[in-house]
Length: 117
Image 1 (tube, rainbow, N blue to C red):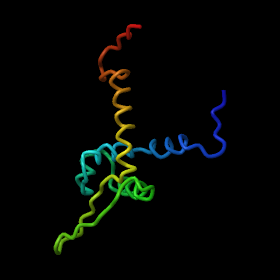
Image 2: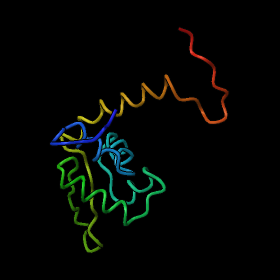
Image 3: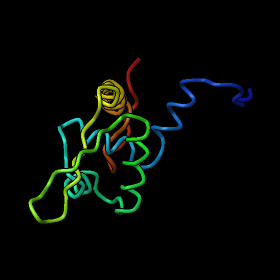
Image 4: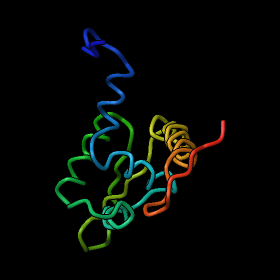
């Protein structure tokens, strides 16, 4: 069976956006409220600054996040990121992934036991 994609498919497009490395980690971190760039980098963990900046710009372009700049009174301006209503709707996607993971993924090093039918 071929999985060749032809024409526009919203699910195919959504998977393309959400599969990009760090995107769901960024969304998950912002579900707990707005964060500055450094706070977001710590919450995501392991993502270099250039990649994080690129992902944030892309998510802003898609209207999933909103960026505002806080005046830091003479210091460098601080960028603060939050989810838009469309971004907040991804809570259900994160919840679904969490439910699936609880049912089907074991903690590393834990022997896999068969699930009773």
